[in-house]
Image (cartoon, rainbow, N blue to C red; front, side, top):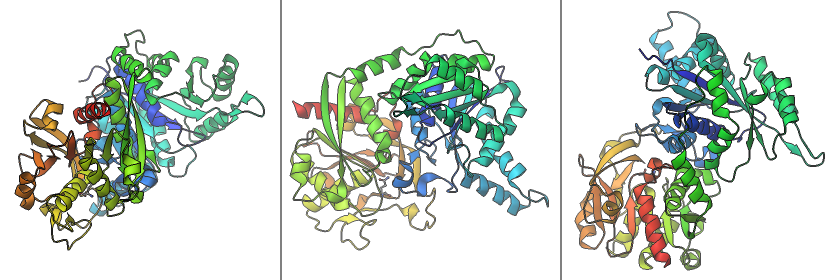
Amino acid sequence: MNKFSTKYIFVTGGVTSSLGKGIIAASLGKLLSARGYKVTIQKLDPYINVDPGTMNPYEHGECYVTKDGAETDLDLGHYERFLGNTTSQANNVTTGSIYQTVIKKERKGDYLGKTVQIIPHITDEIKRRIKILGDTNDFDFVITEIGGTVGDIESLPYIEAVRQIKWELENSALYIHLTLVPYLSAAGELKTKPTQHSVKTLLESGIQPDILVCRTEHHLNNSIKEKIALFCNVEKDAVIESIDAKTIYEVPLLMQKESLDKVVLRKLKLDDDTDVKLDKWKDFLFKLNNPNKEINIGLVGKYIKLKDSYKSISEAFIHASTEKNCKVNIKWINAEELTEVNIKEELQDLNGVLVAPGFGDRGIEGKINAIKFVRENNIPFLGICLGMQCAVIEYARNILKMPDANSTEMSLNTAFPVIDIMANQKNIENKGGTMRLGSYNCTLEKNSYSYKAYQKLKIEERHRHRYEFNNKYLKDFNDHGMQCVGKNPDNNLIEIVEVPSHPWFVGVQFHPEYNSNVLNPHPLFSGFVDACLENKL
Ligand code: GLN
């Protein structure tokens, strides 16, 4: 038996969306794990999609892939980057997946003739999903972030489920509500009314928040905190200011300054006097805020209007470059607008170029143009997933002289299908959750940029794709200077291509960005940043 009963912390949001619940949850998680607790963070999403894998990034930002192959909300990326531990399928729950389970059970007859209803059947399933993580006995704290804003129709079953859970868990559960305290410049005042109303909405659903975290652009003075405490039935020290920060990585320290972790521990009747080990995190922040050099990197993709579409990539750049006291400036380049005419102007001043993952043929020729330019001009290049596939296509067309070489994803009838659908993907019709997903092994060639970066021969990386390098052409590529230096040892699938005659040209079929966190920058991103720094000299 676990002597320490798992504590459950629920984070809701009010007033507006985009207040940063994910970052607050991750920051609290960081503070608790810095005290030696084992923490995991879960996200409940109120939409009907079974997972975000089928959504366009413009709907929902990046789809984050876990080690065990779940396609999840991008907040899970923040959780992993802050805590440095991995999440799993169980860390992301959607309304779609809840209903899918309940309806499957109903079809099997598991409800024994009962009418199946939101309460208790849907709410019971939600509670089961919340407790799954605690029941493993692997965690002291399960922090559950409830997506959406209180008062939304969609989130009502979640709110009801966590109301019930507190009754069952008594002192082992806690509610944190994140709200906004807006500043009205005409009045010159911070306003507490939206927070009061938001708490009232929660109260209508039977939830009294224990702690309020208030997003604000100006400091909350004592009297504002007192007012919020009085009107919202919380203790004054449980009104936590969350002022806008320069970087998300500063938020754990701001929360520590406001004693969020101490208040949580006290309310859960735990010792709040333990050491908080944040030295490495502080070192990272210091370097992030005091760079002594900078690089300019181009990110070529087709969803660049919403930067969240490439969240893990841009964060991985921050981790890798900060370690080297370097600031990274990302130039967001729309692949659809890159032509042979403007390519030089767009790319020539960059220290490195990353070609992003993606699906479908929109923007593909722009990506290929970009790769030709960086290959011919010795600009460091990192291609991820579709970016790697485009590098293979470009090399085939321009070096192997295969004129219309392509991926069968873009052109079914190409004479040179250098990228082709994986054999076990051919007969799959359903789109959701059916790609090659999650972590697989890869063995590296010693004489490669990748080995130099990883410093080991066996690696494991996460995947999300249906197409692969066509091994029929392996010899052609090897003979003409593009080397396949990373292979899956079990099925020979090509995982990494490189051009050794180029200063740094690496294409990877997997997604290194999912494996980068604040205290452990990803080796390939570090290698790429090194190459960009050298390119600058
Ligand atoms: N569309 C490509 C495939 O399915 C690449 C996917 C990706 O970039 N994640 O193989």
